[in-house]
Amino acid sequence: MERKGFLKVVIIGVFALGLAIGVSSAGTQATTHKGTTKVTEYEKGYRFDKNGWIYVHIEGEPYERGFQHGYLVASELDEILESLKYLTYWNTGKKWDFFVDAGEKLFVPRIDEEFLEEMKGIAEGAQSAGVDITWEEVLAWNGYSELTGYWWPNEKAGKFAKGDQTDKDRCSAFIATGSATREGRIVMAHNSWETFEQGQFFNLILDIQPAEGHRIFMQSVPGYIHSMADFFVTNAGIMGTETTIGGFGDYDPNEVPEFFRVRKAMQYADDLDQFVKMMEKKNNGGYANSWLLADANTGEIMRLELGLNYQNVERKTDGYFVGFNAPVDPRIRNLECSNTGYADIRMPAGARRVRLTQLMEEHYGEIDVEAAQEVLADHYDVYLQKEDNPCSRTVEGHYELDRFEYWGARLPYQPAGAVDGKVMDSNMAKDLSFWARWGSSSGMAFDAKKFLAEHTQYSHLEGYLKDRPTQPWTLFKADEGK
Image (cartoon, rainbow, N blue to C red; front, side, top):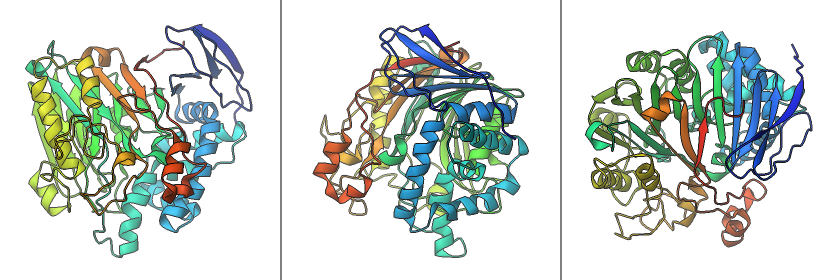
C-alpha cells in the first residue's frame, strides 16, 4: 500500500554553521544558509543535515515510521543500492540478488512482524520518492554484514565449517564509571571502523519514537532499523556500544539474526538484564560482538561478550571496560575464534588493547567527554613506540596509511579505518543526546581522488569512494529540529 504525505520545508536557527544539504524528497532540493538549517518534514518525521551528519526523526507505528525513514533518505538509499550491486559482486563473485534471496529465506521466518513492517515501510517510502528498491533489498541491507561476513563464508566452505574470519578488527571503544570518571558519571566512547566504501554511509543520527516500547537515539545507516555502528541510548537509560569480535566464524543459520535481536532489545528492554536475555535468545552467532553497556540510572556498566556457544557477562559500578575487537573470555577466544591478535601488538586488536588500557589509566579519575574525545583521536603506535603514527594499530585506525609490513595477511593501504567518533556521559544519556564527529575522530580528512591516484590497485573503487573533509564535534539531541 502506498502512502502519501504532505511535504513542507521549515527553517530553524542553529548555533553551528550549516552545510549544503540534498533532501531526499521526490526531487526537492534544499540549501542551508549560514546560521540556519533547513528541516524537511514528512508526516511525523523530519530531516536536516549538519556537519556531515544526516539527522532523521521518525515516529509512530512500524510501517508509518518506516515510510518516513525511507522517504527522507531516499537519495542515500538510491546511492547505497547502486554501490551494493557493484561492490557485492566485485567482493564476493555473487550478484546482489543472490544475497537478497538468501536474506529473505534466512531472516523472514525469524523476525517479528513489527520490524518486517518497518522495513516494508522504508522501501515504500523510498519508492514514493522515486527510488526503485524492494523491501527484500532493505532486509538484505540490514543483514548485509551477517550475510557477507558470516553466512556466505560458511556456506562457501560447506556444512557451516569455520572459515577465515580474521577480517573483523573493527572499532575502538571504552566505557567508564565511578572513580574512573571526573564526576562519577558513566562515560562511553566509540569510533566505527569499516571499509570506506561502506563506512561512508554511517553518517545517520536516527531518533526513533515508536508507538510501543522505548525511544531510541542512535547512530545508524540510511535504511537500517538497527545501528550497525552500534552507539545508542534509550529512554530506559540503557547506553550501549560494541566492538566486533575478530577471528570469529561460527554461525547457525537456523537462529535469529543479530540486527533484529539488538533492535528488539533497544526498543523493549527495561534494564540491562532484559537486554542481555534478548540478545542471547536464539542467538545465531552473526555479527558477534563485545558489547559495552550501561544503566544511566544506576551507574552500572557491563561487558557482554556474545559468541555462539559461549557468553560472558561482567559488571562494575567502579572502573572501566575497553573494546578492541578481541574477546577476553578464554572460551570464546580459544574455542570459537582463531587468530584474534589478543596479545600480539603487531595486530590492531592487541595494540589497541594495550593502548586503550594505558589511556584509561592515564586519565583515571579525570575521564569526561573531553578526555574521551582525545582518547578516540589517539595515534600512538605501541608496537613501533611512535607518538604520532596513525595506522591499523592506533585507537583511531587508519588502514589507508598502513603498509602492513608486520601483518602480511592484510593488503597494504586498504581504504578502511575509523570514519567517526561518538561520546556521551550518563547525564547526556538521560537527555537522549551525544557528541559526534563525522569523518574521523581526530578530524583527519580523507581525499578520495588523491588516494586513488596514489594507490591505483584500488581503481575499482573510483566513483564509489567519497571525500570526508574535516568536521567539528557536534552535539545532537532527540527532538532537535522540532
